Image (cartoon, rainbow, N blue to C red; front, side):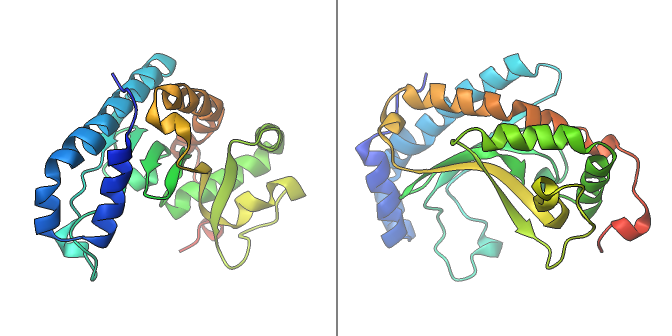
Amino acid sequence: MFTGFTDETVDFMWGIRFNNERSWFESHKEIYLTQFYRPMCDLAEELYGFMLEKRPDCGLIRKVTRIYRDARRLHGRGPYKESLWFSVEQPSEQWTARPTFWFELMPEGWSCGMGYWMPKPLTMAKLRARITRDPETMERLMRRLAGQAEFALETEDYKRPKSAAPSPALEPWFRARSFTIVHQDKLTEDLFNREIVGRLKRGWEFLLPYYDYFITLDGDPDPPPKEVPS
């Protein structure tokens, strides 16, 4: 059971930022395991169990990242990550192409949310087509999002919208290449006890209607070829 992160968790994250090399990590590996990785796994397991209860038929899995960077993708960075995260998602050959719930802890703070990191262009074209066919459903979801302060829509956009949106409230979806509905915060006190468990459960439950909307997109009919960016 998750009981909270500790000051040693935070000290380790800052330590690896400024001492990102093997000898420092090896001398602090036990702290990494006991104060960072295992608590992250415990938190992930609780959120995963919660989501299995909420969506038992979705075939969800959970993943906890490891601290080791892929040696093929260091690009001048050290061999270790300074943050850890876990995700709850449907299994897929390309996990970035499916909507995913996540929580991440970093030296400066934490984030959680749901969204796509790299949806297929066809998926986003299907989203625009669905919104065009039925703008009321997404407008209702956008009003719901605007009516609270925990989460915000963030998008990575094309240079130009791919088509005209049915209403101004829906314009973000017609220029988005990818998106997340995200909460970002500093190192709040609830990270250091069990309060973060309840906060994440409430947040992810709020996001479930959005997940339900997006997870079925791949089953929609293909839009006309001109609607699919290359």
